[in-house]
Length: 183
Image 1 (tube, helix red, strand yellow):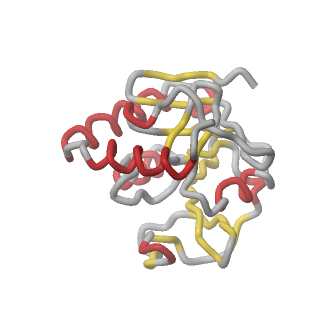
Image 2 (cartoon, rainbow, N blue to C red; image 1 turned 60 degrees about the vertical axis):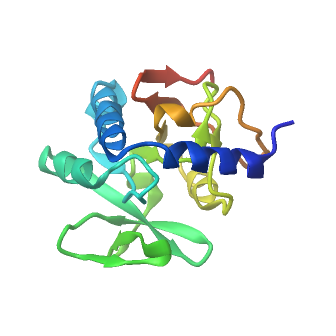
Image 3 (spheres, rainbow, N blue to C red; image 1 turned 45 degrees about the vertical axis):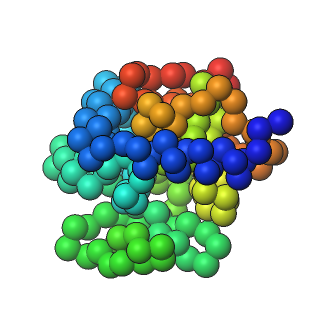
């Protein structure tokens, strides 16, 4: 059985080897693939994330999609959970883990039609390895929205070890394309 801790360590090394140019190019390819999906085109309320340095870059795509008429929401860490708030570029503050988070009121998860989920690693069955705190699994257990896992090419692996509480993504999108999970 694959050890989650060892896999996280390996992914950290793989992502650290990416150049800034590779990160920018691969990120843009992922966003282009997502923009072609019907679930994206039909969604008006999208939960994205404000990227950390080792994640697919979202800063420009947040603005791009917001100017295209999409309502963008971002997660906010409150204790052991994530809440959702509407993105407003003029009302952001640094939150937990040095992540930029929107200020304002919490939004009910039922509003969200599409969720873009970062991860440490993914497999083609839609399984996701997170950072180990369970924030996204708890959030995703409260919604029936379509979930898209996004990652760099180097983060796609053959098999992610799973547990009953792990939430499966409907799609995994890499710079190489879209993988529809078998769920």
